[in-house]
Length: 484
Image 1 (cartoon, rainbow, N blue to C red):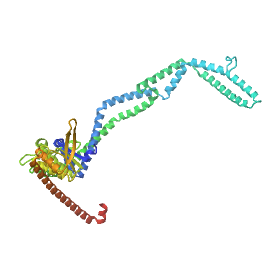
Image 2: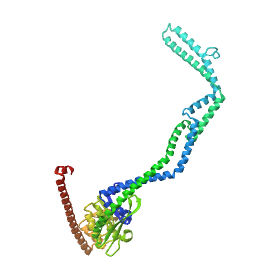
Image 3: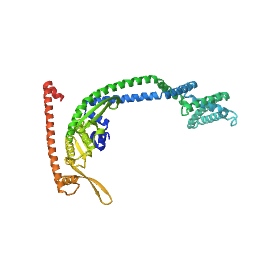
């Protein structure tokens, strides 16, 4: 889809209707412009996009001012609330551990006492605590090691176990001394954790440890919101500047379009004279509106006077279907050399015309084929006769399935097809004679047009050669060869 527009130009009856719109007419006039005009149009469109973007941002900022003020108040209150709570990210974890310990202080004290007495006390095992038993076992192995050195290794392991048991016993004694069943402290810790949990449910996903991070992000957002006044002023200045730039470029674009309009109208008028409208006049009116749009501030309108004495009228009100078909073909022929497209597809653009006008349309399409590939869908034999290749859409029906295909015809088959298009009859000798005459006339005119086109090409080549010779004489042959 992106590449298609540059590869194939499709024109159907819908395109003829589109040509009635001033937007399509302005687009056609712009396509006629040279490189300078195209660069100016591109500069304007780029500036206009920037202007639209800035204006949209400014409007959104103004519209959201009340909402942003409410958001700033909410953030300011939340930040102050978290700051008053003085939250440390590690505090919730410490509080939870402390509450657990204080709530089970009696149970912890009992367990520690039992463990200490098992290691070093006298009330368990009849006075034989763990450290005493390990020490006895170690002495027994040390005594026996005199007879078997292997036992010395086991004795060493028991000595190490004794040191560990002694150290654990001392640690338990210290832990027991620190256990404090303080109901007041427990209540204070629980209240503090409740405050942090309430803030966390209010501002985060329920994790109190995330409160400081949320407050920092809120402070950054608050700074952005408080900068609105400055941002508003900057955007207003930017919009004014971009609008002035667009206005300046739009004036230059209008001047360029006015300059192009006369040449474009003259070129289209010349083409339409060759399409059996010898007395038609074409005028292109450029009317600056002062209202900036995506393509400038101009309204471009094509005016057509189809015959002598007729007032120039806009296409939307004054052109018939046949006249519009020929005008569109004339415009396309004028633009073919300016912005060449590899393939043109015309789908029944000859609707509403016939006779001599149809012959001239066929001839013009054949001339357009000198610049690009031209595919034409037509029901007019006068147009079909000018084609270099004739393809026929054929339908077949076997009683249950209908199939469509395309068949290439030439020689007698083409003559028969043209005669059928002329008379609507199969095998009409009179129609075949008319078709043969039509083919012969089309071939003669095409050959004449090719010769004329070749002469123009040779004249262009001679002009180019003359310019090159003058350039060589002016800047020197070596410099010219380098530049070319």
